[in-house]
Image (cartoon, rainbow, N blue to C red; front, side, top):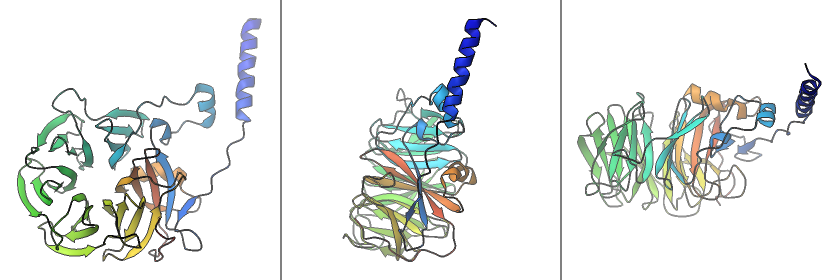
Length: 366
């Protein structure tokens, strides 16, 4: 080996040794809800805006020596969010596309090519079936756009004259679609796109809607609907029979100003995003408030005009975020919450599986 080559090798080894001696940043204390002295039930885990925010197997030393991965695609204004295995799907209403972040290999891509029939104009929400088929509620197209398990465009159902879809939900071999145009919920055959039935219509009575914005399926098979202009949440059968109504306009506990995303956890607890409060309120299956998390503010765990919430129980997905869980704790499911303003991102929270159901409201609603 020449003297020049030996010198380069020595310099490289010294550089690596110096990098290895860089002290690790001290771990951040976990951010928990509700705050002490109440028992914590929800932990903020991390935020995702681009590929560089995704959990990766590469070490900090490798990032210093080789440089971090290229940022690539990032979130601009997220609304609907879904997760299946290692894939995170984000409806972005600035770029009018669905971003796909693949946690397995750290790649990112978009669902629509924006070149042909599969063009997305205003994707609001997305549902992913067990077979990998994707259904996108596109408000500007006035259609539900269908992509196959291979992410290729298959078809689009509906017309702008018939509907303004805001959310879509897979229910077995059917789809539930929230239609803002007629203030109703439509039930479709998800194989053919045939409209099987509908229920609702404008109004404030049980079974009627004022801007039915988001949908969720309860473990018992009933449907939860958030009404942004009705300031409430309803539970109904898939035939439209009302079961429960809770919420009213206001700034107090259990009230709403701009309810949007809704999700139901495996225990039947109903989680509701309020864009005005910038938080998520958790209710019992009978509509009693248990606690809330998020809230407005400058901290990473806060939210800014949140829109949607997704509850994730898939063990593959849970395993990706285990490194963020506080030592000695265990999470039973994830909350993915889209935050549209400030620093647009998806905030990830974990529900701490520690026995008792939360019973305290925590701090006052902002």
